[in-house]
Image (cartoon, rainbow, N blue to C red; front, side, top):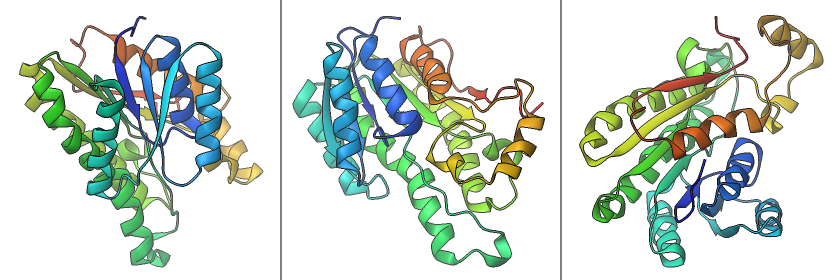
Length: 247
């Protein structure tokens, strides 16, 4: 998979799936923008890894829930690399609670970052992407929770379900411009989010996964890399990366 001459923006790239994705894209030859919201030190570590392997990376801070910051992110990326070919919408948060106990702020924070953040970044990148007239790839990180729901995650599932519908719609709108838009739907992946699960809950989850293990961020990054480097005839799709959790 060769991404030489391409540039990519990865949101939420300082940790977890975003971190692995930024490294994988750089290894394939892409010049990468490592976006982060608050943890500069973690973003610096990702850049250090990429540069040590001969890759190219720049760090740009932006809160994807803020449209103006997303516009600045895109402008800064273009200032560095002159173009954007690939956008990975990965930034996300959780504020889990049963709906009866969920505060309005918990609902809104998740919607603002996980759903509105995808809109903000896509909207900000569209004008330069269309102006380039050379196609492009947009990959959104959804979740199996957005397909099947998950107890205690009404906000998260609603946001990720929205990302899936958004992905399919945008794929139809941009297909004639050779811009492929797809989503990956991770299951339980070893990240800071799943680290918070109780051991008993993890055991119950593992019983539902055919592979009997949690996924790794690299498992998702490999699928994202495929979609970023494909011919583009795969578009409007949602690819579960869940170890056969949902079947």
